[in-house]
Length: 106
Image 1: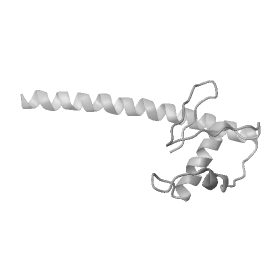
Image 2: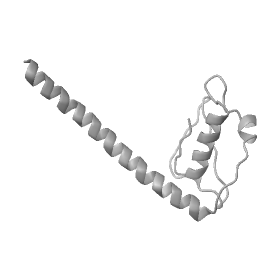
Image 3: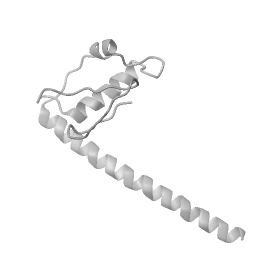
Image 4: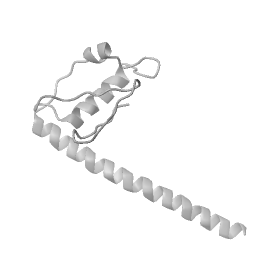
């Protein structure tokens, strides 16, 4: 599992996770997180087959121009926001469904 945190956010890694910082202007940090997530799945990283430093160092990839990465990540952010809204709506609808069923049962 890979997450992205803006550099201004504090993050305190434990023995089960680490931090990877993008130190170049050629790779969008969110894009890098997506690449690592995808490559980790291909390499079957898991709790038992961990993404060790040696294994992560072995990952190689190429990236498109930064503007292309940025545009793609803006689309991802929009889609994630829509997904979040729809998940909240599903929770609300489940509650409504429960209320309707209970009104007929009582």
